[in-house]
Length: 311
Length: 107
Image (cartoon, rainbow over all chains, first blue to last red; front, side):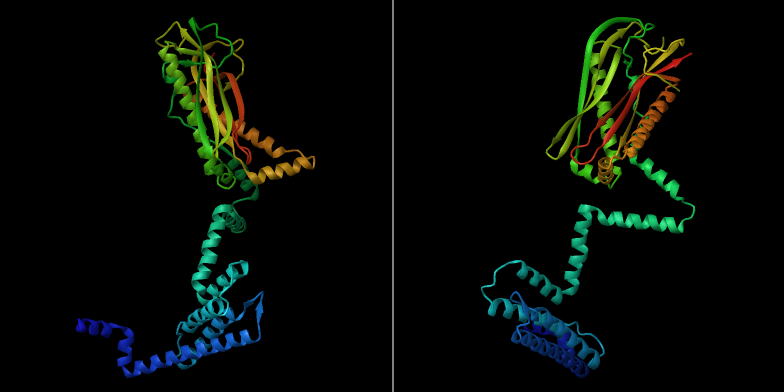
């Protein structure tokens, strides 16, 4: 067991460094630099406390002391070691000032905007890379995701770049392209509704040349479709969602029509006269806009059942 | 391609009814565009942007419908109907333009 501990200690880099004389000297110099930083930081904090260098009870020493400590340590390290020690004293000063300023000196300190702001500033001084990353990357990413503002900015910068450097793209063509992008269309050539055994006619009057044997009455079918309002808001920025909405509406039309054709076929109809199609918005509900496609017409039986389309 | 909203074609003989053809297009909701349009209304300007876009959407729907009719071998569309539906909720307008009719072959 003891041998195991010894072996582990030997593997530690500090232990190895202390064994070697040259390395030991460098290590002591590093410790010296950190000490200088700590001393400068403590002196700064004491001066700030003594001179009451504060605003609304919040002392600037909380920020200045870690900064000065780190700066002093870096200067010393550059002079005696010609390399950085990582501003360890700034972190130590952060701990010292927080413990003294928030716990020992002011145990009744409440949580308010000033306290929260000071914690952020102190953290920023102690862990600049981590806090800056959070502020720049995370916070900005949330703003960008919610508002889409950065996407618009980069898009306009890219457009400007294209306009300046790509001489082939004329401004007029760009405007035309932008205009055409506002209108979306969807073409589905695969689905053939006219090949399902029911002739669908939109005319109000029944054609004289079609021999109608029987009127089966009025037929109606509907299909409800919905889309989220959030997507609708976004669609001002992102056009692809509008295409999705169009496909959604088109699919609803097809489904309603299929339902109607099934009803007609079940009743022995082979034609539909005065076919009408309406899309009605039923209003928003639970964050979604609900619409329905309604198709109605008069079901009929044509004489020629085999091929109603050819007269 | 002959487009007609009537049930028959005068002085023409319909030789074949191909059935239903339809076309859809959508004018996207753009909150910034809507805001701009609102401002123009206040200052008594014409909201020509909307008119242009509606025309563009209608033409697009017609084009899709005509293409479908052509694929069926038709040379005319009768009983043509067109509707404009606002699918938008509280934020902006999303207008769906639907055109449909009966594809026919006439002589």
